[in-house]
Amino acid sequence: MNRCKSIDAQLIGGNEDTGSTVSQIYYLTHQILKLTSHLESHSEDYSSRRGLRKLLGKRKRLLIYLSDENTLLYAKVVKTLGIRGLRKP
Image 1: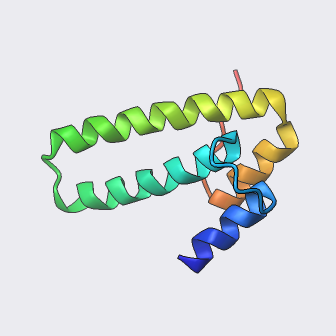
Image 2: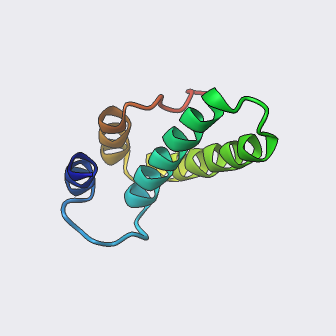
């Protein structure tokens, strides 16, 4: 848990604002990781799979917003969290 808090502090600069875009992406990423590990052992859990797809869509929309608003912060978030960036059209 300390590692998670340190990454959170790095990304949002120690700000406790859980409504910021970066903070929401961070927490969604950890929810996605938890659901992914759950689905590895329960492959036929369709309601969890649906929830995972909803979380992925929400994170994608937030990443699109962040890339439009602050490109440098977007690049930092993608690199720190180890997630794929958005495709270039």
